[in-house]
Length: 287
Image (cartoon, rainbow, N blue to C red; front, side, top):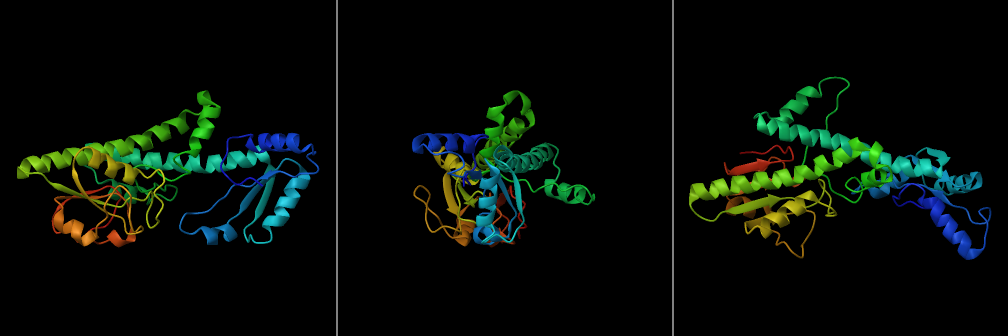
């Protein structure tokens, strides 16, 4: 059973290789695709409770796979073919990427017209059939930031929306980096001295320790590479090989510009003592 996110047709190709190597038939070795559907930080719970999609290369492979997952899954198990199961995983993450891109694009538009994007989204979501997500500093993790490309590369001419969403979310990270850099240079000019920037959050989403493909980590590293004095806080990890971590209260005290990149619970209602703030993740802060 293949659970890893894969291009369409991967299960069939893997089966072909193994069957050729073993001189077995598809009725002797059974192959199926069953994509993992878990939320980082809540993996063990969702491994049991979530619905599963199973796509066997044969009917018997699907039956055997379903029997296996029924030993621990409480969610409903849905049977389909392997290619549809593979595409279901890719479609889930492309859908989320597109929705995040809409929120991120709104945030960039609202900045130009001095509109509070978080108030805007809150008001817009009062509509019973609208649910705009909260914008952030891009998209990270080892799924949403990568999986849509499997679809786009398979058929570039018919996946314009998927490709555009990827481009928007990547642009948001670069846009925030430029925003922070410009604000920092403005403060430096105002104070006529070098300044310190405090970056809050390195993981790719709130309340986890996963740094894979993290836009917050990328922004922090780029600021360091550009020569800015950076203090960073990530409450979900103890250390980082390239970035020295400090306590949040120390960063607030010693920084001239506070940049909130990830909406960790520890940062909610944090006192910023009227320091210059860039809040790109919608945190409620106490000035």
